[in-house]
Length: 456
Ligand code: NDP
Image (tube, rainbow, N blue to C red; front, side, top):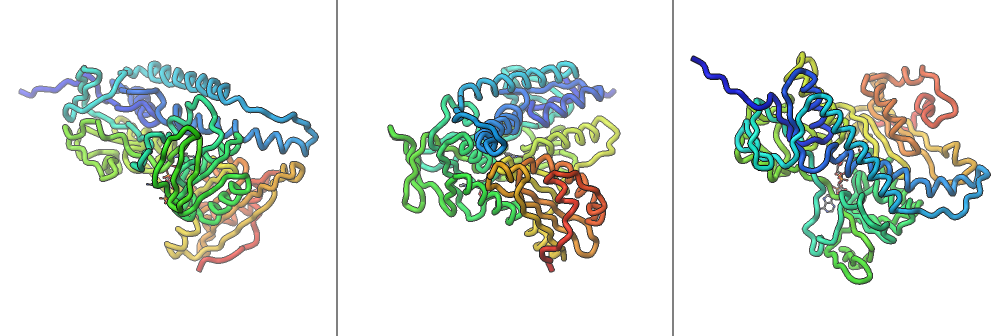
């Protein structure tokens, strides 16, 4: 006689962020009985304290420059004044709307939503708000949280989480870090008229990206008035009546109304009760999975920011689709991390797909490099000195385009399109055979004819 175990659900998902919501909906659509637990807000980091509000802030801050640019086109705009509270209110309203949409999507898909923090009791059981729930499979999609340094006085430092909810816009800000969030927020605050200092421990911002393009963005940021302190760390923070005193490693002190750290994010695995399962984690706290999102515990799976793959919403969404296909579908899909396009919403924007020049050199691939630097058509009349840089790297032997990197307006929009071509492995000749759209900045990428230099 066999005894069959019955579970409350076929799939229990922990975390209703980008990956968790997508996996829940798709698994339910595939006929599974699904529940998702969320301790904070539907939509996770991306919707609430990440991509979406960040992009809204970037739009908000860029108006400053747009008003100035408008003069060259004949507009007289009286000195513009920004209302921070209105921005926050409107942003909050939009986030609430999106939270509602996520709720509706889950409900319409037939997913049960469980409010509260889930903790593992055993491999098939979680406890949420005192209630135990069982499932045949459990998917961890809890994402991450900003890292706060253990620098003395760091309790007065904010992270991006708080920056989205400040009651007042600071007059002076110090941002620590040199990656995506630091660079994006430096642009946001600077655009809003805040005296902005970026304190970075190294000598090259965005150092994992193509160096020439990252340097170009750095130069443009400096031109726009951001004070960048390279090779500098902060030894201590102290909150005084005149602001937060940031003691720099070079002996000087910066005083600001807000100090914000953006030094990376850590997986939210600490209080999950993983010790009650066979799930393994790395030193960073991220969960070890195989290429089918299986942890070391046969009943438990994980995806998204918590597994140490690129911390990007579209990656989590793709992982969720692949996971559902593999476990509840035809099992014909697998995750491919090759040539993931990405954008930094710095000002100007920077976007990239494929290999950087440094990666091509490290792999010793002989290649030709094409670059084009120019003034955007819009800035001929605006008199704005901002420039655009485009860079394409082409493998010498095969003519395949290995990487495209860009800094300039709408870089993310442009590289999203060209990302398909790079992903498809198209050749430079195929780019050349494509007719440009005139006048656009993007047409430059199909009219690059002159090799600037070769990588041997
Ligand atoms: P990043 O990993 O992009 O950058 C972290 C930065 O902090 C680096 O410059 C790093 O320096 C520096 N740093 C790390 N530790 C310390 C320390 N102890 N003291 C001082 N500096 C330190 O992390 P972010 O926090 O900016 O963003 C987290 C992730 O979120 C990103 O990696 C990205 O995946 C995602 N994200 C994506 C966005 C997008 O798609 N546009 C926007 C925002 C975030 P070093 O370079 O020397 O290591």
